[in-house]
Length: 116
Image (cartoon, rainbow, N blue to C red; front, side):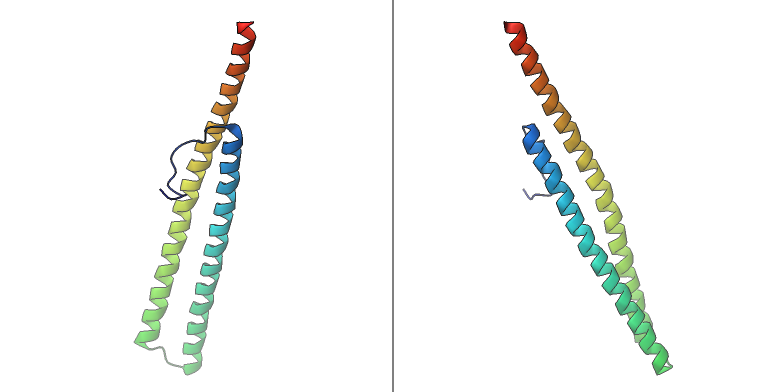
């Protein structure tokens, strides 16, 4: 099982808090990398277009390259949207787990009091 396919809720409030922190850090890292990739892809696309303007001839290869790069950038953007949705679901799941851990602690405290 990879760190991205974990489906269980951590067993304690501290573990859940730690999972939420890791979740946010991994999300930030992946988003930063994808933004860098998008930026580099756009820069490459712009450079190819500028080069073709200076050559005063747009070849089929240039058009095909630009089209291919644009399609890859669109796919990356779609993946980012999918990841955002999945991260939102995972965060909600972890927050619910955290609330359950808190509820469990409260129930344990009440149980101790009632036993006296």
